[in-house]
Amino acid sequence: MRQIVLDTETTGLSAENGDRIIEIGCVELVGRKLTGNNKHFYLNPGRDSHEDALKVHGISNEFLRDKRKFSAVAGELLDYLRDAELIIHNAPFDLSFLDNELHLVGLHPIRKCVAKVTDSLMMAKELFPGKRNSLDALCDRLDVDNSGRTLHGALLDAELLADVYINLTRGQNSLRIEEVGNPDDGVQTVFVDLRAFDLPVLHASELEVASHDQVLTGIGKASKGKAIWAAISPSV
Image (tube, rainbow, N blue to C red; front, top):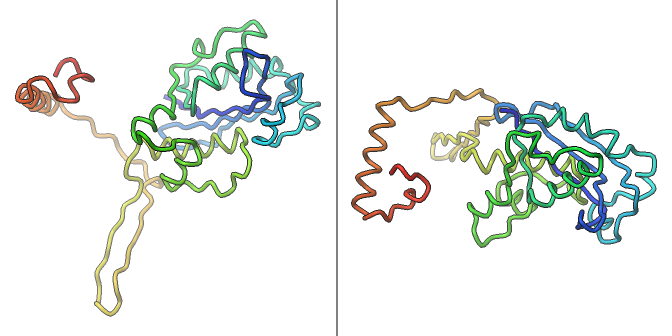
């Protein structure tokens, strides 16, 4: 399935109160790899950005005056997103703005167009409970270089989020090998970036799945139904 990492910038915080989208950035992943087939729009919102919003994204009202309206790019955007999985950080915020824009031009909500929506903020909260899980915080925690991010920008943030998402869901992303040579030479560490390889996906056989289920069932019985995965997998 195609995955599209999406981010927006807006005139303010509330679509219900009339705020509009001013920028949309989309980054495509196929097979969990960046394809370079990205989409980026600056939009004329028909209103000025709030002062606090300007401090966040730095996109001036004057810059947006000659940009296209959302209605002019809606078809192109929906064609690009169609049947993909959307990955959004704090998805309810961006979806509220996208759905509002689509409603204003007489189109269905975004979920009618895409296969599913994944909220990377909710994923991060499950993995790092009690910690800060903003995009900047996750970049620091997952060693994603965000040194070029002085202001928010939809395309840059989508590119950063793509790296963050891959790190959130992949686990090990490099192979570290320590070569011990002459004691006087010290230890040489070699890093191999696994992203350069097309790694095969090896699925478990029916026998392996049955054996795995049997072990889980035994543990479930021994714990008298208190196994954590019991709530996730009703069959255990």
